[in-house]
Structures are given as structure tokens and as C-alpha cells.
Length: 415
Image 1 (cartoon, rainbow, N blue to C red):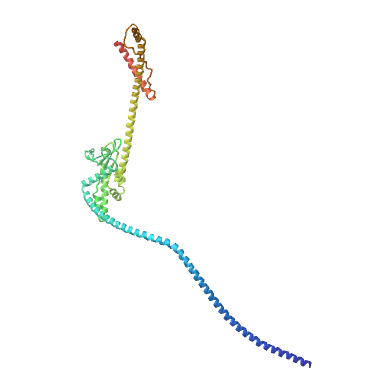
Image 2 (image 1 turned 90 degrees about the vertical axis):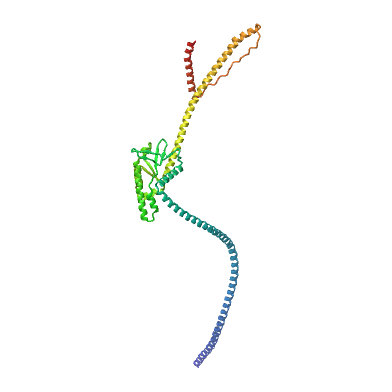
């Protein structure tokens, strides 16, 4: 019975537990359903809130950005205005300067164009005049005269005036009687002289200037070098330095233009050294000018030295004359001293002998003008003291005493 009751109790408990479980299960399902609904609503609300927050933040950010952007733009405009204004002014000044430079450029371009036109015309005239000069220089007498004129210009530019330093066209004859006529004789201090010859062959060089073909021009220049070398040999044979002595053992070969020697050297590199060995010195206007300036300086030094010698001679002559004058002055002083002594002796004799007798005569009744009283001279002449003058004065005194001694016997004989 108890077992049945226990079983019934257990079954009842089990049924009760089952009923409770079923009840609780339904409640749990309902709560889960409500929880799911609540969660869904919360999710919706949260999403709505997030959306509102995002919109609110975006709106606030947009407003703040707009305000900041406006302030920034205003500030930037103010700053940029302060920066751009000087830049604008500078650009305006630069623009003005550019306009000025453009005007100056246009003016300079116009002037340059005019100068180029003038230069072109000048070149044309020069080409024409050069052609005329080449034609004229082909005549030997014109070429010789031109060389002499160029030579004289160089000499005058160097300060070597014709009347004192050089002589044009002197002539002489060599040992065989051939006439030698150098173009210039350069006189040096001490009586020496240097011969300058300006008769240079230029026909081949002129042909080269007129040649248009390079090969033909080269051939004419080679011929010019040979002609110049032959002329050097002729000058060496003439030996001008032997005919115009005293003269250094060389002659100067003057070339009226720098290009003549340079063209010959380009096709005959040893012509200058060979000329030196033959005692012929090729000289362009520049080289001759330097030589003449050196000679002019030597002449100036010689003039100064000659003046110094003349001053020395005049000084020596003045010293001699001063010595003679000192002797005469000393003799005059001695004569004056002697005259004073004789005068004092005369006064003493007059006072002690003549006037005493005169006074005695007045005491015996003889009348007349009162005899004057004469004073003696106490001043003495000053003797020569300068040592430079004493020797001459003593010598003159000895000569005077000797002459007096020589005259004394004659005076006694005459007496």
C-alpha cells in the first residue's frame, strides 16, 4: 500500500514536474519571442538613433566646416591681398621696364641696322679703295714712295724728328762704285748710325691679294716668300754698314705692313733666322716703332748727360772766376787797409808837424782861415775767411808781392 502510495506520489510529482516544465517552456518561448521582438525594436531604434546622430554630426561638421572655410577664405584673402599687392606693383614696374627696354631695343636695333648698313657701305668702299691701292702699288715708283711715306710716319710717331735724329735719302757708293741709297739713316748718340731700307718687293703679294683661287693664292704667296728672301740676300751683299761708318754690322729691312712678313713666314718659316745670320733685320712698323722709341729715349738721356756736362763745366768755370774775384777782393781789401794806414800817417804828420808850424805863424800875427782838424780812420777792412777763397787770395797776394819785388830794382835803377 505504501508502495502504491509512493509510486502514486512519485508519478504525481513527475506529472507535476512535467506540467510545470510545460508551463515554464511555454513561458520561456513567449519570453524569448518577446525578447526577440524587443531586440528587433532596439535594433531599429539603435539604427534610427545612429542615423540621427550621424546626420546631426554631419550637419554640425558641415556648419563648422562652412564657418571655418569662410573665416579661412577671409583670412587667406586678407593675407594674399597683402602679399599680392607688392607683387602686383612689382609686376607693373617690371612691365614698365620691359616696355622701356623694348623701346630701347627697337631704338638700338634701328641704330645697329643703320651701323650695319654704314659698315657694309664702308666695306664696299674699302674693297674698292683696296683694289685701287693694289693697282697703284703695282707701279714700282708708287710702291717705293708709299714705303717711304709709311717709314716717315712711323719715325714721326716715335718722336724722331727729321732735323735732329734722322736723314732721308742719303746716297753713297760701295767699293765697286755702285750707287747706294738707303731710305733712312738713323743717327745714334756718339756719332753712330743705323741704316734702314724700305725697298721691299710686293708684286707677288699683290697678286695673291687679287687671286680668288686658293691654289693660285698659295702659289703667289710662296713666290712672295722667295722674292723677300732674294731681297734679303741683296741687302746683305750691299753691306750698308761698311759704307756708313761708324755703324753696327746690320741693316734694317723695313716692311710697310705687318702682313708682308707674316705671309712670308707662313711659307718660309726660316726666313727670319736666315736674315739675322745675314745681318739683315726684318722690321714691321710695330718693331721699328719700338726701336725708334728706344733710340729717342737714348737721345733724351744723351741730352740730359750733355746738359749735365755743360752745367759741370759752367760750375767749374764759375768756381774759377769766383776764386779770381776773391783774390781781387782780398787785394782790394789789402789796398784799402794800406790806404787807411797811409792816410792816418798823413793825418799824424799834418797834426804833429804842419799844423804846429801854422799855429806858431798865427801867433806872430798872420791871419787866415782856421786850419781844420782831421780825424784819423779807425775802421779796418774785413779779410777773406772762406777756405775755398783763401788759397786763391794768398796766391794773388804772393803774385803781387813778387811783382812788387821785381819792380823795386827797376825803380832804384831809374832813380
